[in-house]
Amino acid sequence: MSLTFYYGSGSPYAWKVWLALEHKKLDYEWKLLTFDRGETRAPEFLAINPRGKVPVLVHDGLAIAESNAIVEYLEERFPDSPLWPKDAAARAKARQLAAEADGYIAPVQRRLFQETLYTKEEARDATKIAEAHAAILEELARWDARLTGDWLAGELSLADFAAYPHIRAIRRVDDRLPAHGLGDRWPARINAWMKRIEALPYYEKTIPPHWKG
Image (cartoon, rainbow, N blue to C red; front, side, top):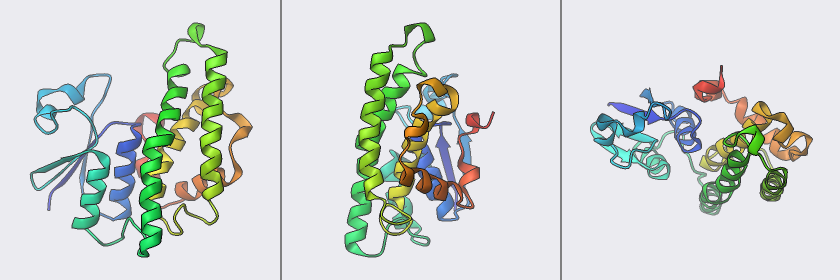
């Protein structure tokens, strides 16, 4: 079996796949592509994914792009250490939450990045940043209310692996620009849930490489 995982450091979608690969205890080769050097637009990568986006998984010559397609393939092809709950209702809820993570957390996270990390200091607009914070806090409150147990769907699942990278990216602003982060406004249950993810034995391996510097 040959598994090759192409990813970009800091991509929440790639991080979701990386957590899934580690959760399933699969052997794979990982290849980091650097956005700044245009490696996702290099001819050799475009031959694998003509859209020039990560993540991509290549399994015995089969190239699969798009994070949701990749994790569904991993679940069907390698069913041990499942990514979804066994119970049908819990499984449906986990799928819903995984979709909501990409559909609702990702946009507010990108909005904050655009107003802070991706804007020069002299061009940052305090009103726009405050509006981005308000949108994030409103969304996080919904997720905080759902955390009635340790994990989002009753047991550790892809719902957690889908939501965590987007939420952790929000905290990246706290790390790099504390004056523009959420500070002490993080919901308590979200904080505790993040710590549980970060205590997983394979978590450290998946931290975006450029975040470690």
